[in-house]
Image (tube, rainbow, N blue to C red; front, side):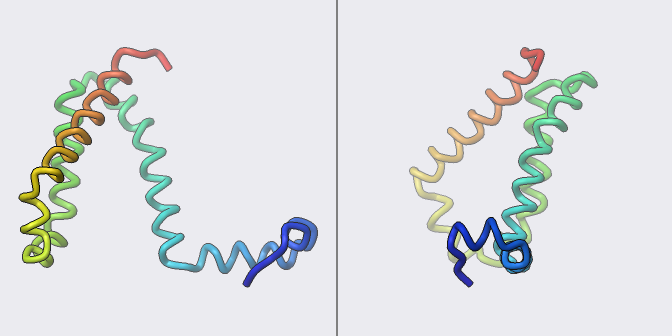
Length: 113
């Protein structure tokens, strides 16, 4: 279902049909859920830091919970993931990602925003 810009914004019924179709797709729904979780994580981090949880402990808890949630899926695909996980590039990317999250937690701890 393709709409021109004029048709999409000036015909409400067509726009509603487009939005309903867009939201009914499983991939788009999962992306919307991911966006809500990602966006709310900043609020959760701020709340946890205000409650006195250390930023390193908070980051460790977050990654520990993520590990527990994704471990069953990883076990099911262990043969395919084994070569990927042991790749030096993937290890470097994982380290940089963990470091960026640590800096995010530390930044939120020391800012007033």
